[in-house]
Image (cartoon, rainbow, N blue to C red; front, side, top):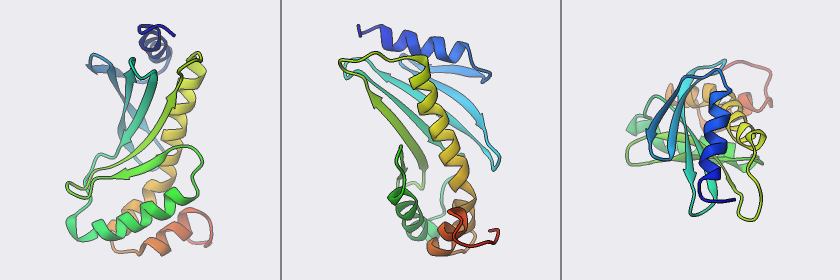
Length: 156
């Protein structure tokens, strides 16, 4: 695709969706996502030169320092079974985000592919968010992941 086409596809996708969209940089758009377990900002970034589109769902809170090690274990357990995307955790400032991305060099980006990136990120973030809260509140990573992934019949 030409250098401008990726941005055009992402912009067209966002126009046709119900989210409030804000362009926060030349090639980055922010959307407000509302899930069953919370809300957060997702950022769609177009990397024209690399022919890539990234979506980061960024949690609206930071992990307290004293819970970061246990949250890191939780996110590692969560990432182990994921097929699409991964959690990223900044141990210095406590930011947690979920990333999906696609490289379309030699292929065509479509609105459907952008939708898959956004929805996969939103669904996965929403699924694992209660476990993150539980670990912050004192649960172990093992306990929280067992509940979130359905290995125990209890609520967090």
